Amino acid sequence: MGSLFLYLLRELFPGNKFQFKSDGDVYTLVIDKPRVEDSGKYTLDLGGVQSTAFLTVEPPDPNFKFVRNLQRYIDGYLKEDVSLECQVNSHKAIVHWYHGDTQAEESEHYTIGKDMMGICRLTIQRPVRFRKKLKPMNHTEKDKIIMEVETDYPDAEVKWFKGDEEIKPDGKHVKIMSEGRKHQLVIKSAKLVDAGEFTAKSNSDSTSAPLNVSYLNKYIKGLGDVEGVEREKVVLEVELADHTAPCSWFFGEKMIEPNERIEIKNLGGGKHQLIINSAELEDEGDYFCKSGRLESQGHLTVIKGESKPKIKFDGPVVGPVSKPLTFEVPYKVSGKKQTEMQAKLFRNGKPLSSKDVEIVIKDKVVQYKIKKPSRDQTGDYEIKLSNGQGEETKKVFINMQGGWDLVGETTPDTLTYKCEDLIPKRKYRFRVKAVNKLGESEPGMSKAEILAKDPWDEPGKPGNVELTDWDKDHADLKWTKPESDGGAPITGYVIEFKVGRSLASYHCRHLRA
Image 1: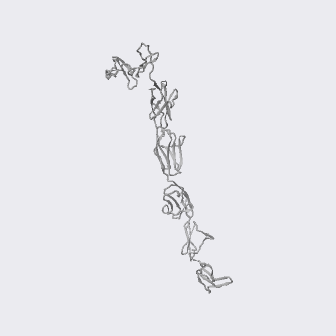
Image 2: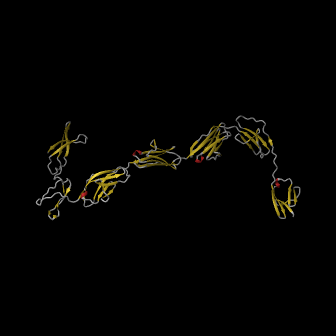
Image 3: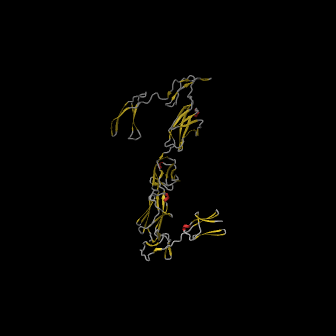
């Protein structure tokens, strides 16, 4: 079977460079002195059956050598940088530096470099110490933060780190500035995520300090003017943007401490409450909530709560039994209404039921309606009004007039009667019935009501009372007669005096007309 060797699909021929060998089923291609350009795909073709291999020829190792040696002697100054230089024939050469038998590695003490010209440089750096170190910092969101260190030598290299990560300035949020011995890390507008451990490093020293960034606290909801009612609960509430910020409460300039009547609560989420249980009139005034440098002020007005009812009614109550007896009892409750008022009517120490009396409480009066009055219900009653603050009672006489009262009887021959013990200023009507063995007749009625009073009235008041003369021990008066004598001749005059603004008056003399 014929064999064929191919290179990149190009047939190869035996010669000085390529030799073909076969031993049974083993076929060998020999390449004499291969070069890098001989790399590629090689194929053995045996009657259409192919086997492929890839050859990679590496270039020979370069011959690196120094073309410029280190100076044998170099002078330097204490605590100053010193640089050593040499040059190799290729920048690809790998160069190691040694101090005695110890290899020098890139570090804070050594700076090692090599350029494209093959110039190798080792700089022995002076040790840089921090004269001014970082201190712990507390800032608020959006603050401008300046971290500053100071080295013992000007123009030293200082690197900044947050945690283990080196800080790269972006020119917008973070800047790194150096001038002489001063080195600054500037955060233009602090964010919460900027908090952490910051470190400044030189070649031989470091300084670290924490940065704490707090919420930019403000009152989302501040105190306003609040109106409360005496004896009721009053709640003052604020809401802070910083959910972790504490706050203190003040009444005027005095700090408020919790007690059995006053509660101070942190509800979480920035919400804080001052709760005044059972407010008093003395609680009225200005209140302050302070959180750090923040302050919110509000005014609490405490309205007087309701008083117990005061009954403004003396009676008596008079009414017929022919229809329900209705009367109204005026009352007064000062302050703001807080509880419902109750009203009852008592007789003999027991309250009348709703079956006997209907009670309607209105704004300023209580209306009582005795549904079925009768003469035997006439007597002393007790009115009781009450609310959450107390009660007041008042006795009242209720007269349920049941028609006609028997005042007397006469013999068949006596056709006159004197009715005595009438109540002055009250109106009366009279009737008379005849009686025989079969019973009473229909009554004969008086034509009109009469008013129980004297036939005559009191005289009118004297007019034009004047002082005509006076001295240290006397005064002369004169006056004119009343316009009316009341139907009876005037029998005299009574003269009285009062000293200064005294409430007492004194009888001076009774003059007969």
